[in-house]
Length: 235
Image (cartoon, rainbow, N blue to C red):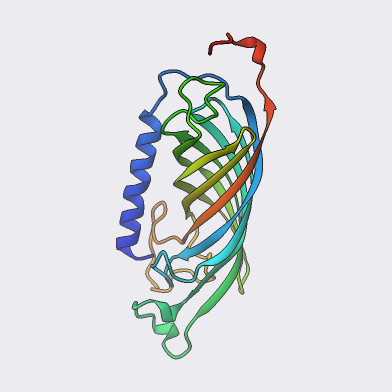
């Protein structure tokens, strides 16, 4: 992964992490529904030694989503996502001695399972269950995940750090439409099937490791109604 892209991604990661740590709602109550389930579709892309562009080699992906809402500001999301990671040594200007005569290309199946903490910038909801809640809310997320990639050499299983942002809209009391973009920093340099094509050893967390990102549109269904008798009628 190019140094410039990695530097920008690390800055974005630090910014999102700080916002999530220090941002806390003044008040919080239960949402009208405590759970959401649904799915999403979109595009995902590989970022690493053989691609440094966010718009190159994008591939279709799909996901299943389960979300637990703690209050109108915060929630925990479990997401399973599958798609392809694609790239080629022809797509980068970096000189790789091993692939000058025969360019390296790959299209690897990837599966991601992650748990992320979400923070809405303002209270999200219909406005009936929480005074001041809005049906449209932007949010940030960060968490932990696991990645499985099937390469031409052998399968790779590793951890990853997902983080990103999105916006959600309550289409109906039980329907939620969302759009989100996230980047996944993996702990492996072999998601593309090749380790250290520079032939230079590197150490450190996320040092010269592969990443991938995804832009998805999702639709979820709310269920598990809150206990209405536990609150005052004017809340």
